[in-house]
Length: 626
Image 1 (cartoon, rainbow, N blue to C red):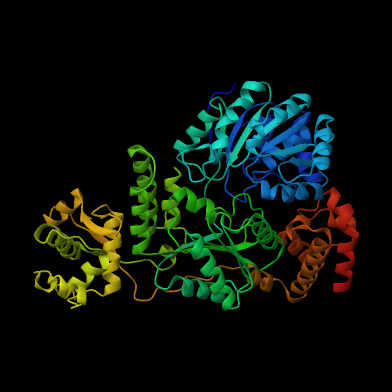
Image 2: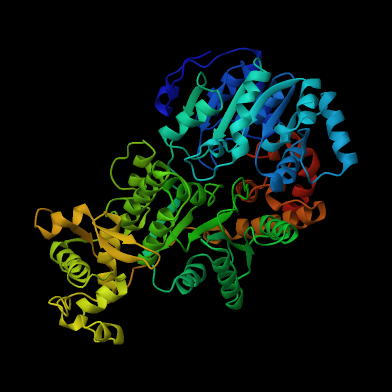
């Protein structure tokens, strides 16, 4: 076994690549089957290592080409690659995508009828397929284990490996049993893959999967094509609608909400305003969820409004935006979800509306969550990191990368804090006024209230509630007129984020913390992010429509003809359009206008099988366009 070692991009650039027939075969498969001339990043190093029989733990961002890291070894090594994936609803699409490039693949899950299951099992035993997809819970079945014993396994690929981490954002209990793969089949190499994991989560994955001797390959977490923006939450649905109309008209995207009710209401709001939107959450029946997911995958401009139950493993490359209407619970979850935008490498948006109520709600959820004190502290630490990302005045991308242990230098130029640098101001006096209000309510009146009531006191508002409790007689009544209500809410939110204020009880009342005393005692300065009266629009990401417009007029017209042909072909075959060809491939075809099959074969993404299947049709479309 190779001793554990993190392999950086710099290390790989200077490493000696292994040689041999199987290495040559891997490059041949890349070109002949998948239609690409060269590997990206450290794909080749991972593939060579696994082909040679080594275990690997691979961290690569969404859209970075993780799948090829096990698909190519599956075609080069003897035996069948068994892929463990939690994505039952997407296995058919994954198999369709492989079949489209001429790879023999199958899956076994609860959606199959008995006859189809028996056929796939027979193909596996006979070695007539190259990849077999299984859900992790299938390995708890003795029948499945006996089936695997009867076949010849070339490797195990454990996709979405972060699901094994109990401290992660998408825990799946069935993943805890996957260490048995090494115990039952010790000679079969294993590759575990995920897009999101801190160093602590990586260590947990390696331990729980018995991959402590595996070689670690850690890619850069940077997705430079994604523009990160976090805006103050005012009227979130209206803010979302403005985003879609101004920056992403007619483009596909995902909107995440915390609750099922919010998903339903947001989808209804968008539809009422002319947006083709669909809901997705666990409360919908299985048939509706499946139908909505299939429509999202197969149509060009559908917006999916969902809880976090949706999105993992979605291979749709042209998702132009991911929007959050509620605060994610962790940076890992945020990164995983935003990473579903722009898999094709084209400019895309990650947009989050964030407000005071988000902080109150998340703190309350942690306080009432099941689990011991250590578990709640871990949840709080995840939330603190997410709040720090929201409140930073630094480059958001730099802070995001540093969270995952990747050093960043300077600003990225493609996040809101770089495009519209925020101001910071000395909010110590404002903090003292707010904390004094909480102190006087608690200590002098033995009462606790929420943020809204405290702000009303500071602004000197004689509301019924204030009059009833005689809070207009407090010395802090009316001392906060220098700030607006929105600015005071920003102060409360930031003090909560920094732990200088706490939320307690079922009603979200404010309470002092140990850090509050330092501020009230003038032993700590509080620097705050200034709330903009009206957030400026960030530079518009160059979405798909803009990219098409940048093509010469003739090429843009040809591209649209190619997209129309692809849409009709995909509908006829009952597969997502991207299974036929990605936009990037069609754009290159439109720009280069190949006139023969030989020229067409040199386009990136056109492998042998697709050339044979679609080559003549593509040339006909090009001839008609000319």
